Image (cartoon, helix red, strand yellow):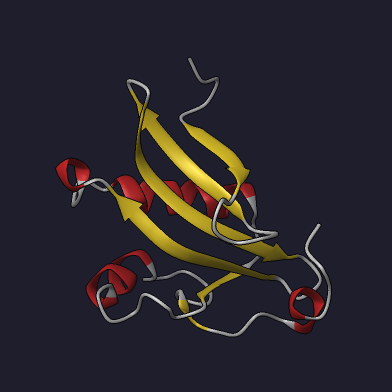
Length: 116
């Protein structure tokens, strides 16, 4: 049993990124990759995914809100690789969020150095 509803691990797809996940009965039901730069006050998320049976239940909205709450003061963006299929989603979860999950390239602090 997890101590919290969220589990953060290294992303399997993106070197230096983290993955935020939610599990239910041992199955992953929500995941999103994220990267932070405190120096620039920026955060990025990529590929938010909720399993079909739990889509449109607010799980991704709550997961992203929890992530922002744990990392206050950041403007949140995406690299834009999944924009075509997620415009409606971004408009809902980005409302009132600094950065609004609009596309933005990685800052020089992250792009110019190897990931930890």
